[in-house]
Length: 274
Length: 274
Image (cartoon, rainbow over all chains, first blue to last red):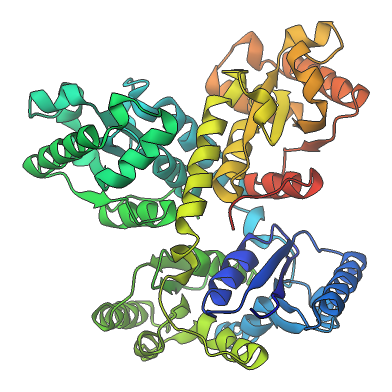
């Protein structure tokens, strides 16, 4: 197998954007192994020179020049990092010029714009929605349930909690979740407190074998984790959601991001964070 | 004020990468107002044509052609979207060619690579770390505290919970948090159960005025939310952290992403999600 190539994701802020873009670009190259290194907060020329040294050192160790994917707002910092012996792809440099021409405005090239002005508003919405989601996780409290933007329902361990957290962290959505438990299936009706909130319900389901695996890690050897029980619960939960006309998604092979984004779109939720 | 321009973030997946990159590019243009529209899951030619219609319609309404920033792996879909009357900036198209030349390998141009192979491993780590973080939020349980990768300490409402959640969701870090309460200050020592875990502690602090504001939203008019009490708690908490040699960050003007990324880097935590 070929030696791995090193990719650096360099940013003057958190590096999350460079890392997400870079990672998805690199996964397009089958058969190449990559070491991925994120270097955040490169916001001075001194730090830029340190990164250059690190990149060059890595290139010497690898025997191949590294790949650098960056988001660097300030031109002089981008230029300094660009002096490394590497393939240098800077998202700002590449995109800012066509945007300047299109808009007829010069870019500010200032660091950290995306978090400055709207920061307090976003922070407030995020804290508020995360608090809401945490206090309405797993049916813990049903107080204020009508204030939810969306209420995820589904059997225990089908992925409701991380999806709710992603909706609240990323989009500022107040996402509650309510587990469907075996007692709910006997009546073949929605739990009483959910009935008036039908318009806010969105379901998750999961492949029973996958559910068994997840539950077994949590409570090994329990009745709760048997395949027969998982099959029963999933079948009943799906039947209930179908009967009640509640839209639902299969979480088995979807990431938390995909589930959250799909629900945002399909349930036409209004995000509070940009 | 000039009319707003519309920017579309178009993706064959969740659109989160295009949206983050696009948003940070647009914030570089002071004085231009933007309507930002994310269009995820554009993974067929039919959907591409629908997006083109939507973009052209918006351009006609705005009287200015929209800006399109996209991450589209499949060439034919990117080309179809590129037919819209817009400034079209596709991250894949721009970056894939130089990467192909550098690596000597053709890109697969397949959709959704970044979530396929490593998905189950990432999912497992994420669920596990989110569960850990939720069950160790706000000192709820101190069982398994030694299994934490990091334990955030600080006064109530200084931002520990969202930072822990971001660390677990984004990086798969088991992040516990432990509130410092007035009783902890009288002894001027760390709470007993934290003492053996000193190497895992990381502090957050906050400006007392900002803390007052946050607490007042939560419990209006309470003693807990008075400025005098906030000043006292912050001063004591900082003194304790300094005395014990615990590193800490000021959360007042930092986003949750910045706090999490800084702690990841400074505490040299090993992420489990890529």
